Length: 410
Image (cartoon, rainbow, N blue to C red; front, side, top):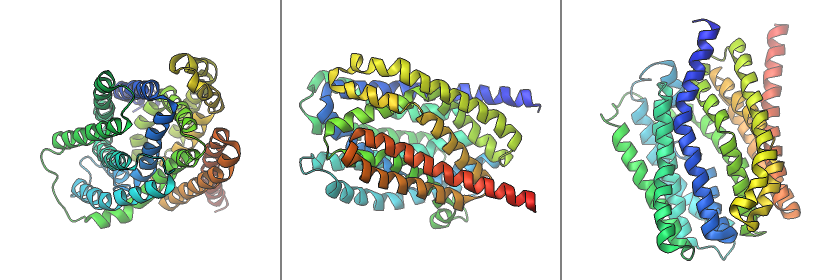
């Protein structure tokens, strides 16, 4: 296959994935708009604080098994015997540990005024549903079915959106606990239905045990956990300053996610190719240049187009989110560098580097959040995001540069 044909195939796969991923982003934006406008900054801040705690604990469910499924089934159609069954076994075993851990974190980390009972249910449902949907969807991605991957991920958000619209018409803003309960129930129902559809016929068991898989998959979990921790740990810390600040920060971060949608589609189509090629440098340079250019355009759109619209759409209570969105304009650029470095390291089998970089980013995110947020509020939370991304990338850059120099001198 020529370089032109390879690039064309890559862009076609990206476009196929863009449909499902675009549908998911559209639904996510609608969910944010609906919840923010109906619940208001304070109640919405409480809602997303629970989702933030669930978000940084979810990667521990399955211990990164979805990453191994993506890598192995990208390299070999059908993957290794028993891989899918082992991944599912590891998923439910770790779920039984992570959910109680999340309950303890929610109890001790949040202010006393928090609606704990509904929050615990939402936390458990979000961890279970999100982790299972991701595991099932990654198998479709590994097989090159980017459309199915996107649809599987988007379906969860669309199902929630439809139920929340009906709830808004029937209940309005006065029952935060019911909003949490319905959001969780829909997630569990969708994950169960997707599992029924995707896992027919039932995955065959092989020689791989769930804990044997965990020995290979834990670096993927470390990478994902580090990324989630550096992005979501700021919200429970910020909650002590006020749930309204949490709501405004979350709106800004979700706006970044929506604008960076083309980047996500390009990256999700790239990962299986990098795994198959083992991280071919020539192909990587071409595609990385395209990703970085798209990230710069996304930042310009965030700063000069989307940020001024936030208070017009959500009301003056969210005016502070516009300022935060302008400050986050460079975040897509850092995310491209981090994501590409992680997959390139995994493609070359350098899983200790993945775990080390993730640990550095998570530690930096936690330390910066604890130091900067009490002093600077939401501005400190933005600074902590950048500090964590920079720490992660510097670990990768140092390792790749040192490895290259070692090859040259050798």
